[in-house]
Length: 355
Image (cartoon, rainbow, N blue to C red; front, top):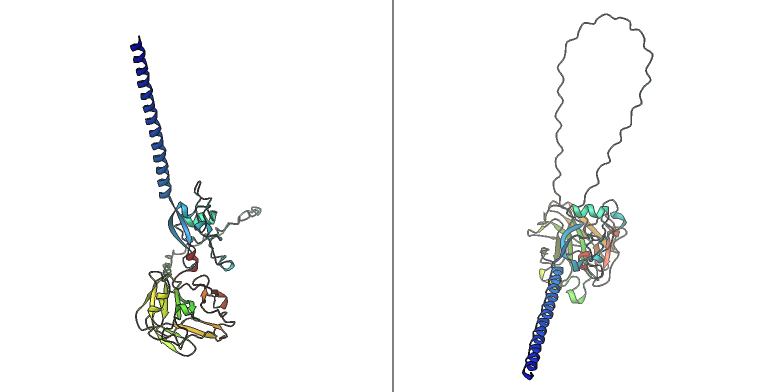
């Protein structure tokens, strides 16, 4: 009997051990499943992307269509695309504002969207290209029905002799209007004339750090070889071939190594004159005139006390600042086209620095 009791106890121990093993295996499988699903969801979230219309700040091409991670448009994050606020770009209202915002479609549990109204959705669905508004459809005015005159008995007339039938005069075929050719439109977009000590020398010195930024607001490239740039005293000629792309930038300076002080985006055309700009740009007031190879004036500005071109002139800025068009390419032949740029931005849009 003692052996039977001992046998039963051993049997219960085996059963309990097996139950514990099964329970441990079950808990382990649950734990691994939770880790796997969490990692899968996290990986899925990291790979999730959306397409947005990113505002460029350039009137010629107001938006670029780009693909970004959800984290770049999350309403709860700071400094991402959801902070690029501003109205939807419109050519009819551009004179009222200069800083338009991104267009972001709503994403569940990520963002409620930005500028997702009818205008924004129209631009987004058109690959972020601006759609010109259609012409209004004319409304036909119904013609009133005349009141019939009382019927009179016709007086019989003699039957006229038939006149000979003349062939119709052929109408000339209209000549279709020619399609407009793409055009370049270069402007003096930014000028760094009062150089601080951390960006080279100021004025007529060997290591002159002065530079001029050109922007092509047109839809065709332009080669600026044999173009000239003139200040108050001297004219300098661009003697080598340099192509400025549509919606692209070119930087003009005495030497290209001066741009080692700056972060220049790839694709920016660098033009070395081999000599200072003019006789050195004056901090108290100067002018710049850009002409093509035929002597046609392309753009011209003046600043500070020099009112020979713009009157009033562009307001002068402090050492280390620049004068820059806002937005890029905006040109109404007025000093109001320019702002005081505290941190100069050679070869790039200030708006894009927010990304």
